[in-house]
Length: 494
Image 1: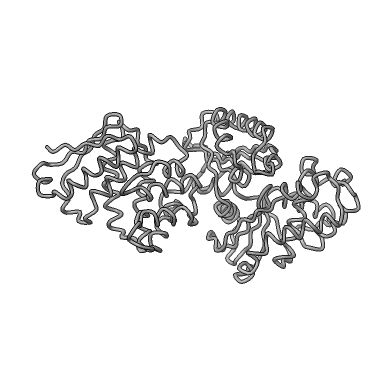
Image 2: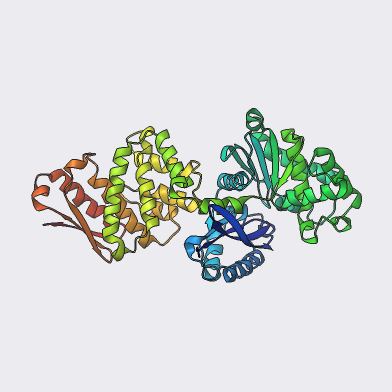
């Protein structure tokens, strides 16, 4: 009997937290279990974008429940992403520290662009279309818009306007009026306006809406008209029904559950603004979104790994010396294998270092002087599909400090992880680049490396180093650089 291991995707949204468990059966994903908890995270943001203690408590309680469901799931089988509220809250590190106490899986805070990309993947891998399509997701704190064809996105955008934030701003007390809707719609249109021209220029043949807000509105549309598509006249009809009711508690539609009433007016205003600003005629609902996109990418092979494709595309764009990067990768693999036991290096560390090797010279596109600084800026601020914010910062830090002095204040600003381990992989990266700096693979000596705690020893043949005094000087200089991050680097000439 074949074994079909399970995988899980967790979406920490601004309104709700979702957990989906699936397994791959003969190349297809089979959904096994779903959980959804209303957390109202965005409602817990104050004016300074700090998350309230009550909101944190609600989140931790849900994460604790999810941890029970995921008991015995290996870490590599669970992907957790956090969206608008957590990527914008000022006390994120405090929340993550608390979350770690009840939830053993890493929480990856993703950018709005990455959120949009995953939403599109969730739709595209379940609903096929040979023409351009516009996919829209109204979340609690942001709205994502994507134009794509087949499995490929062409245009991504995330706008800071969502059902919960709009509800707080215009309908917090539950009162509904034409004046309030008008103000909310204008505000939403202002948020969308800056991307309107580029979306209209590219165009689309169909419009798909996804996730909770649009799903609830589609259900109300069907209850009132039996229609399966959303149109602007029907949205205006629902809005008038709300206005006539005067208060959300007076709206009596079977399709509108009680828990959705706390955000539906804000979501309706955003959707009306989207229809008007983009000139939409009709929209249909998809049941698939970010969580399904996560699941799909989790069971892909390395050949189709989005991060590998992103790095290769980035490398092509900046005309990176691929052979040089590959030579560095080979040295990284050699050193990592030799240090695996002493420094607890894992396959992810090696993967990250090889990606950094393919990016470390992107700064040459600006200037060879200070190229490590230019490169770090490019990596940090570019769109890198498939990478979380933390992963992108890690790559940026590796590129920034692959050579010359290591400035600890800058390093700690970039790295939000245990520094001892990062410093060790940084040392491996720096030495791998250093021994390949001549770009002449056939001239390299046999090398080996060992470590005891934070003491690192590079072993080189004595007869070779005698004829390469400049290289020896570079290695001796590296001893001073690595001392900055607490690594004692020594040379052994045998």
